[in-house]
Length: 209
Image (cartoon, rainbow, N blue to C red; front, side, top):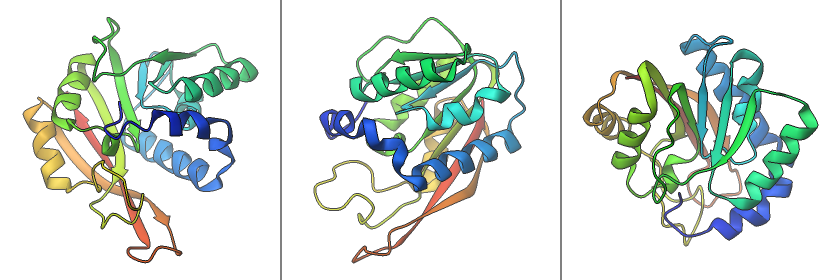
C-alpha cells in the first residue's frame, strides 16, 4: 500500500503504535467527526483501509455493524488481531489487503474510512476508483489525511505525498465517481521540534457514491 517501501518500518513500530497519546486522540477525533457526518447503526458495514492497529475502527466499533480492518503490514495486523481477541468484540475482522497489488474483495460496504493512509499511496486516483467500486450504492467514503505541508511532517527521505491540496483531491474523487464531496478540519498535529512547519492540520473528506 505504501509508495516508499517502508513496510518493515511499520512492522517494527506496530507493538508500540498505540502508546502514542497523539495517535489515540487523533483517531478518536476523526471517529467523532465521521459519526457527526455519516449516520451509522448496527447494520452498517465498514471497511477501514490502511487500519494499522485499528485505532479508528475500534473507536467506531460500538456504533456500527461489522467492521473489516484492512492493512498490508504483517506487524500491524498481528498487533490488531491480538487487540481484537482481547476485546472480545465479535464485529471486528482483520484482513490483509493491498489494493495496489491485490484484487478487490467481493464484499461491499456502506462506509469506507481511512486515516493517514492516502499520503503513502502513489496513485490516489486509482485508489479512489477502487474504493468507489467497494461501496454500496449511496455509501460514504471518509478520508482523513494531511493538508499540503512543507515536508517537515515525515522529514528527509520521505517519498510519499506531502499532504494534499483539497481541491485537487476533490477533483480526483469526483473523477472516480464520488459526489457531495466536502472537507473539514478535524485535528491538528503539533511538532514543535520541527525546523520548518510545526502545525499540521488534518482534514476529513466526506464523499458519497
